[in-house]
Length: 170
Image (tube, rainbow, N blue to C red):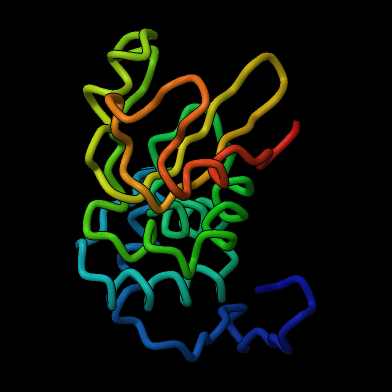
């Protein structure tokens, strides 16, 4: 606010008058006091609070409110990478799907075997997969359901071939 972007003038007593709707300012104050963002799940409130946080340039709130994506629990992707991936996928069924924000499988929790992957992911509809190997992050999207029974050495269901794309290299 005081970066020079806005014309700010102090009153006689040195205070500043901020002409903003104070409806959601309590969330900002509480965040500044505690470092915790506690907000109702109501999407309209969250959008309005995001606008206020952007006005006040409170990066911590902005990052948390923008990070409500399907990748919020990712231990692989950084915030900017999550946003980029969402931009790439914004018109796909993966985003509009009711279970879009559900983590189906994490190898470090569910086990590394292919059978573990298929027991968690088969028949779940469109999916996004992100994998980290060394310093490389790759993965892709398929609009087809995984089906561990359908795969053989040379035969993949329609649409799966488009799955194997490189997404991000760090």
